[in-house]
Image 1: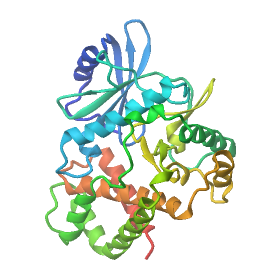
Image 2 (image 1 turned 180 degrees about the horizontal axis):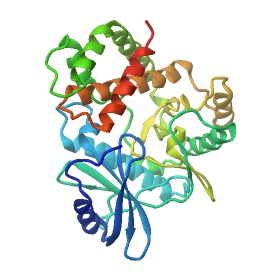
Image 3 (image 1 turned 180 degrees about the vertical axis):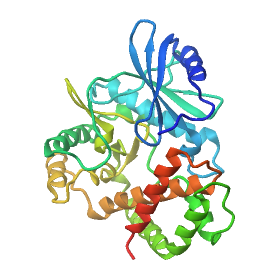
Length: 330
Protein backbone atom coordinates (compact mmCIF):
# COMPACT_ATOMS: atom_id res chain seq x y z
CA UNK A 1 0.00 0.00 0.00
CA UNK A 2 1.09 3.56 -0.63
CA UNK A 3 0.13 4.89 2.80
CA UNK A 4 0.95 3.63 6.28
CA UNK A 5 -2.11 2.28 8.13
CA UNK A 6 -3.70 4.58 10.68
CA UNK A 7 -2.93 3.47 14.21
CA UNK A 8 -0.04 1.18 13.32
CA UNK A 9 2.71 3.73 13.86
CA UNK A 10 6.38 2.86 13.84
CA UNK A 11 6.43 3.02 17.64
CA UNK A 12 3.53 0.59 17.89
CA UNK A 13 5.15 -1.78 15.41
CA UNK A 14 8.44 -1.69 17.33
CA UNK A 15 6.56 -2.91 20.41
CA UNK A 16 4.83 -5.63 18.38
CA UNK A 17 8.19 -6.88 17.09
CA UNK A 18 9.66 -6.85 20.57
CA UNK A 19 6.74 -8.70 22.14
CA UNK A 20 6.26 -11.18 19.30
CA UNK A 21 9.83 -11.98 18.24
CA UNK A 22 12.09 -10.44 20.87
CA UNK A 23 13.46 -8.15 18.16
CA UNK A 24 15.23 -4.98 19.29
CA UNK A 25 14.79 -2.40 16.52
CA UNK A 26 17.53 0.09 15.66
CA UNK A 27 15.74 1.63 12.67
CA UNK A 28 12.42 1.23 10.89
CA UNK A 29 10.99 2.73 7.71
CA UNK A 30 7.72 2.29 5.82
CA UNK A 31 8.04 0.94 2.29
CA UNK A 32 5.30 1.84 -0.19
CA UNK A 33 5.61 -1.33 -2.31
CA UNK A 34 2.92 -3.64 -3.61
CA UNK A 35 -0.80 -3.08 -3.14
CA UNK A 36 -2.81 -4.94 -0.54
CA UNK A 37 -0.41 -5.37 2.38
CA UNK A 38 1.65 -2.81 4.28
CA UNK A 39 5.44 -3.18 4.44
CA UNK A 40 8.37 -1.93 6.52
CA UNK A 41 12.12 -2.44 6.38
CA UNK A 42 13.68 -2.96 9.80
CA UNK A 43 17.26 -3.11 11.05
CA UNK A 44 17.89 -4.61 14.50
CA UNK A 45 20.61 -3.79 17.00
CA UNK A 46 22.87 -6.42 15.46
CA UNK A 47 22.61 -4.65 12.06
CA UNK A 48 20.49 -7.50 10.65
CA UNK A 49 17.87 -6.39 8.10
CA UNK A 50 14.29 -7.64 8.24
CA UNK A 51 11.10 -7.14 6.27
CA UNK A 52 7.75 -6.72 8.02
CA UNK A 53 4.28 -7.15 6.53
CA UNK A 54 0.94 -6.15 8.04
CA UNK A 55 -2.46 -7.16 6.65
CA UNK A 56 -5.68 -5.36 7.52
CA UNK A 57 -8.41 -7.85 8.47
CA UNK A 58 -11.00 -5.55 6.88
CA UNK A 59 -9.43 -6.34 3.53
CA UNK A 60 -9.13 -10.06 4.32
CA UNK A 61 -12.79 -10.48 5.33
CA UNK A 62 -15.01 -12.39 2.91
CA UNK A 63 -18.02 -10.38 4.10
CA UNK A 64 -18.55 -7.34 6.29
CA UNK A 65 -20.33 -9.50 8.88
CA UNK A 66 -17.59 -12.14 9.03
CA UNK A 67 -15.84 -12.43 12.43
CA UNK A 68 -12.25 -11.25 12.61
CA UNK A 69 -11.25 -14.74 13.73
CA UNK A 70 -12.25 -16.23 10.37
CA UNK A 71 -10.21 -13.73 8.34
CA UNK A 72 -7.24 -14.09 10.66
CA UNK A 73 -7.56 -17.87 10.55
CA UNK A 74 -7.23 -17.92 6.76
CA UNK A 75 -4.17 -15.68 6.88
CA UNK A 76 -2.55 -17.79 9.61
CA UNK A 77 -3.28 -21.02 7.69
CA UNK A 78 -1.70 -19.65 4.51
CA UNK A 79 1.48 -18.49 6.25
CA UNK A 80 1.70 -21.72 8.27
CA UNK A 81 1.58 -23.63 4.99
CA UNK A 82 4.41 -21.50 3.64
CA UNK A 83 6.43 -22.41 6.73
CA UNK A 84 5.66 -26.10 6.25
CA UNK A 85 6.77 -25.91 2.62
CA UNK A 86 10.01 -24.22 3.61
CA UNK A 87 10.62 -26.80 6.34
CA UNK A 88 10.15 -29.56 3.75
CA UNK A 89 12.99 -28.14 1.67
CA UNK A 90 11.22 -25.73 -0.71
CA UNK A 91 13.98 -23.11 -0.75
CA UNK A 92 12.04 -20.91 -3.18
CA UNK A 93 9.41 -20.20 -0.51
CA UNK A 94 10.09 -16.96 1.37
CA UNK A 95 8.27 -17.87 4.56
CA UNK A 96 7.80 -15.78 7.71
CA UNK A 97 9.89 -16.15 10.86
CA UNK A 98 8.09 -17.97 13.66
CA UNK A 99 7.17 -15.89 16.68
CA UNK A 100 8.44 -16.78 20.14
CA UNK A 101 5.16 -18.69 20.54
CA UNK A 102 5.84 -20.67 17.36
CA UNK A 103 3.21 -18.88 15.26
CA UNK A 104 3.66 -17.47 11.73
CA UNK A 105 2.30 -14.04 12.71
CA UNK A 106 0.70 -12.01 15.48
CA UNK A 107 -2.63 -10.21 15.67
CA UNK A 108 -2.49 -6.63 16.94
CA UNK A 109 -5.29 -4.89 18.80
CA UNK A 110 -5.75 -2.78 15.68
CA UNK A 111 -7.01 -5.78 13.70
CA UNK A 112 -3.77 -6.19 11.78
CA UNK A 113 -1.91 -9.43 11.17
CA UNK A 114 1.84 -8.76 11.40
CA UNK A 115 4.50 -11.14 10.04
CA UNK A 116 8.28 -10.89 10.14
CA UNK A 117 10.48 -12.04 7.23
CA UNK A 118 14.19 -12.33 6.59
CA UNK A 119 15.34 -9.56 4.27
CA UNK A 120 15.93 -10.99 0.78
CA UNK A 121 18.57 -9.47 -1.48
CA UNK A 122 17.72 -9.76 -5.14
CA UNK A 123 16.03 -8.24 -8.15
CA UNK A 124 12.38 -7.32 -7.66
CA UNK A 125 9.71 -6.93 -10.33
CA UNK A 126 6.36 -5.18 -10.74
CA UNK A 127 2.84 -6.38 -11.47
CA UNK A 128 2.25 -6.86 -15.19
CA UNK A 129 3.53 -9.05 -17.98
CA UNK A 130 6.58 -11.21 -17.46
CA UNK A 131 9.52 -9.32 -18.98
CA UNK A 132 11.17 -12.41 -20.50
CA UNK A 133 10.33 -15.97 -21.44
CA UNK A 134 13.12 -17.13 -19.10
CA UNK A 135 11.30 -15.43 -16.22
CA UNK A 136 8.08 -17.27 -17.10
CA UNK A 137 9.85 -20.59 -17.33
CA UNK A 138 11.64 -19.99 -14.06
CA UNK A 139 8.37 -19.30 -12.26
CA UNK A 140 6.72 -22.29 -13.96
CA UNK A 141 9.40 -24.55 -12.44
CA UNK A 142 8.50 -23.21 -8.99
CA UNK A 143 4.78 -23.74 -9.60
CA UNK A 144 5.37 -27.31 -10.74
CA UNK A 145 7.40 -27.95 -7.57
CA UNK A 146 4.63 -26.42 -5.46
CA UNK A 147 1.81 -28.37 -7.13
CA UNK A 148 3.70 -31.64 -6.78
CA UNK A 149 4.85 -31.03 -3.19
CA UNK A 150 4.52 -33.93 -0.72
CA UNK A 151 1.40 -34.25 1.39
CA UNK A 152 2.98 -32.94 4.60
CA UNK A 153 2.70 -29.20 3.85
CA UNK A 154 -1.02 -29.58 3.18
CA UNK A 155 -1.83 -30.06 6.87
CA UNK A 156 -2.58 -26.38 7.55
CA UNK A 157 -3.82 -25.39 4.09
CA UNK A 158 -7.42 -24.34 3.64
CA UNK A 159 -9.41 -25.36 0.56
CA UNK A 160 -10.65 -23.02 -2.13
CA UNK A 161 -14.28 -22.07 -1.53
CA UNK A 162 -14.47 -19.68 -4.51
CA UNK A 163 -15.77 -16.89 -2.26
CA UNK A 164 -14.85 -13.36 -3.36
CA UNK A 165 -14.07 -10.96 -0.50
CA UNK A 166 -16.47 -8.00 -0.31
CA UNK A 167 -18.90 -9.41 -2.84
CA UNK A 168 -21.66 -8.70 -0.31
CA UNK A 169 -20.82 -5.00 -0.40
CA UNK A 170 -20.70 -5.08 -4.19
CA UNK A 171 -24.18 -6.60 -4.19
CA UNK A 172 -25.44 -3.94 -1.78
CA UNK A 173 -23.90 -1.12 -3.77
CA UNK A 174 -25.38 -2.42 -7.03
CA UNK A 175 -28.81 -2.72 -5.42
CA UNK A 176 -28.95 0.80 -4.02
CA UNK A 177 -29.12 2.62 -7.38
CA UNK A 178 -26.66 5.30 -6.33
CA UNK A 179 -27.93 5.75 -2.76
CA UNK A 180 -26.65 4.59 0.62
CA UNK A 181 -22.97 5.26 -0.01
CA UNK A 182 -20.81 6.52 2.86
CA UNK A 183 -18.85 9.76 2.74
CA UNK A 184 -15.79 10.13 0.55
CA UNK A 185 -14.64 11.86 -2.63
CA UNK A 186 -15.10 8.79 -4.82
CA UNK A 187 -18.47 7.61 -3.48
CA UNK A 188 -20.68 9.42 -6.00
CA UNK A 189 -18.31 8.59 -8.86
CA UNK A 190 -18.30 4.89 -7.98
CA UNK A 191 -22.09 4.88 -7.57
CA UNK A 192 -22.54 6.41 -11.01
CA UNK A 193 -20.06 3.96 -12.54
CA UNK A 194 -22.00 0.99 -11.11
CA UNK A 195 -25.35 2.36 -12.24
CA UNK A 196 -24.11 2.95 -15.79
CA UNK A 197 -22.51 -0.48 -16.08
CA UNK A 198 -24.84 -2.66 -14.00
CA UNK A 199 -25.67 -5.03 -16.86
CA UNK A 200 -22.03 -5.64 -17.75
CA UNK A 201 -21.15 -6.28 -14.11
CA UNK A 202 -24.03 -8.75 -13.71
CA UNK A 203 -22.82 -10.65 -16.77
CA UNK A 204 -19.28 -10.78 -15.34
CA UNK A 205 -20.59 -12.21 -12.06
CA UNK A 206 -22.81 -14.67 -13.91
CA UNK A 207 -19.90 -15.99 -16.00
CA UNK A 208 -17.79 -16.37 -12.88
CA UNK A 209 -20.51 -18.28 -11.02
CA UNK A 210 -20.97 -20.57 -13.99
CA UNK A 211 -17.30 -21.48 -14.06
CA UNK A 212 -17.33 -22.07 -10.30
CA UNK A 213 -19.98 -24.74 -10.79
CA UNK A 214 -17.69 -26.53 -13.24
CA UNK A 215 -14.75 -26.37 -10.82
CA UNK A 216 -16.78 -27.79 -7.96
CA UNK A 217 -17.42 -30.91 -10.03
CA UNK A 218 -13.67 -31.71 -10.02
CA UNK A 219 -12.50 -31.69 -6.38
CA UNK A 220 -9.90 -34.36 -7.10
CA UNK A 221 -7.76 -31.81 -8.99
CA UNK A 222 -6.92 -29.77 -5.88
CA UNK A 223 -3.22 -28.98 -5.33
CA UNK A 224 -1.30 -26.52 -3.17
CA UNK A 225 -1.40 -23.17 -4.97
CA UNK A 226 0.28 -19.83 -4.35
CA UNK A 227 -2.61 -17.81 -5.77
CA UNK A 228 -0.77 -14.80 -7.22
CA UNK A 229 2.48 -15.89 -8.94
CA UNK A 230 2.70 -12.75 -11.08
CA UNK A 231 6.06 -10.97 -11.61
CA UNK A 232 5.52 -8.66 -8.63
CA UNK A 233 5.55 -11.67 -6.32
CA UNK A 234 8.81 -13.05 -7.70
CA UNK A 235 12.44 -12.20 -7.06
CA UNK A 236 15.67 -13.29 -8.68
CA UNK A 237 18.36 -13.99 -6.10
CA UNK A 238 21.89 -15.40 -6.33
CA UNK A 239 20.40 -18.80 -5.52
CA UNK A 240 17.69 -18.55 -8.19
CA UNK A 241 14.04 -17.57 -8.49
CA UNK A 242 11.90 -17.27 -5.35
CA UNK A 243 8.22 -16.57 -4.65
CA UNK A 244 7.12 -14.04 -2.03
CA UNK A 245 3.75 -13.02 -0.53
CA UNK A 246 2.33 -16.41 0.47
CA UNK A 247 -0.76 -14.99 2.20
CA UNK A 248 -3.06 -16.36 -0.53
CA UNK A 249 -2.06 -20.05 -0.33
CA UNK A 250 -4.95 -22.48 -0.84
CA UNK A 251 -5.69 -26.02 -1.94
CA UNK A 252 -7.25 -25.25 -5.31
CA UNK A 253 -7.33 -26.28 -8.97
CA UNK A 254 -3.90 -25.86 -10.61
CA UNK A 255 -5.35 -23.28 -12.99
CA UNK A 256 -5.36 -20.81 -10.08
CA UNK A 257 -1.60 -20.41 -10.59
CA UNK A 258 -1.46 -20.95 -14.34
CA UNK A 259 -3.87 -18.46 -15.90
CA UNK A 260 -1.44 -15.53 -15.51
CA UNK A 261 1.67 -17.50 -16.51
CA UNK A 262 0.86 -18.45 -20.08
CA UNK A 263 1.65 -15.72 -22.65
CA UNK A 264 -1.39 -16.70 -24.72
CA UNK A 265 0.23 -19.21 -27.05
CA UNK A 266 -0.29 -22.27 -24.86
CA UNK A 267 3.45 -22.81 -24.35
CA UNK A 268 3.38 -22.66 -20.56
CA UNK A 269 0.18 -24.70 -20.38
CA UNK A 270 1.79 -27.38 -22.52
CA UNK A 271 5.00 -27.34 -20.52
CA UNK A 272 3.02 -27.72 -17.28
CA UNK A 273 1.14 -30.70 -18.70
CA UNK A 274 4.42 -32.32 -19.79
CA UNK A 275 5.96 -31.79 -16.35
CA UNK A 276 3.03 -32.94 -14.22
CA UNK A 277 0.85 -35.15 -16.41
CA UNK A 278 -2.09 -32.84 -15.61
CA UNK A 279 -3.67 -30.98 -18.52
CA UNK A 280 -4.98 -27.54 -17.52
CA UNK A 281 -8.64 -27.04 -18.40
CA UNK A 282 -9.64 -23.95 -20.43
CA UNK A 283 -12.89 -23.36 -18.45
CA UNK A 284 -10.95 -23.26 -15.20
CA UNK A 285 -8.26 -21.02 -16.65
CA UNK A 286 -11.10 -18.67 -17.56
CA UNK A 287 -12.53 -19.05 -14.05
CA UNK A 288 -9.43 -17.55 -12.50
CA UNK A 289 -9.10 -14.83 -15.14
CA UNK A 290 -12.65 -13.82 -14.27
CA UNK A 291 -12.03 -14.10 -10.55
CA UNK A 292 -9.19 -11.61 -10.72
CA UNK A 293 -11.54 -9.01 -12.20
CA UNK A 294 -14.40 -9.88 -9.82
CA UNK A 295 -12.08 -9.65 -6.81
CA UNK A 296 -10.66 -6.29 -7.90
CA UNK A 297 -14.13 -4.95 -8.62
CA UNK A 298 -15.48 -6.03 -5.23
CA UNK A 299 -12.44 -4.73 -3.31
CA UNK A 300 -12.54 -1.33 -4.98
CA UNK A 301 -16.29 -0.93 -4.50
CA UNK A 302 -15.89 -1.91 -0.84
CA UNK A 303 -13.30 0.83 -0.44
CA UNK A 304 -15.62 3.48 -1.85
CA UNK A 305 -18.82 2.10 -0.29
CA UNK A 306 -17.23 2.73 3.10
CA UNK A 307 -16.02 6.11 4.43
CA UNK A 308 -12.75 7.11 2.74
CA UNK A 309 -10.54 10.17 2.63
CA UNK A 310 -9.19 10.38 -0.90
CA UNK A 311 -5.74 9.01 -0.06
CA UNK A 312 -3.15 7.92 -2.61
CA UNK A 313 -4.45 4.37 -2.17
CA UNK A 314 -7.99 5.61 -2.93
CA UNK A 315 -6.71 7.37 -6.03
CA UNK A 316 -4.94 4.25 -7.27
CA UNK A 317 -8.03 2.13 -6.57
CA UNK A 318 -10.25 4.54 -8.49
CA UNK A 319 -7.92 4.42 -11.50
CA UNK A 320 -7.95 0.63 -11.37
CA UNK A 321 -11.73 0.44 -10.99
CA UNK A 322 -12.36 2.82 -13.90
CA UNK A 323 -9.99 0.87 -16.15
CA UNK A 324 -11.50 -2.48 -15.15
CA UNK A 325 -15.10 -1.45 -15.83
CA UNK A 326 -14.12 0.19 -19.13
CA UNK A 327 -12.76 -3.08 -20.51
CA UNK A 328 -15.68 -5.29 -19.47
CA UNK A 329 -17.48 -6.78 -22.48
CA UNK A 330 -20.51 -4.77 -23.55
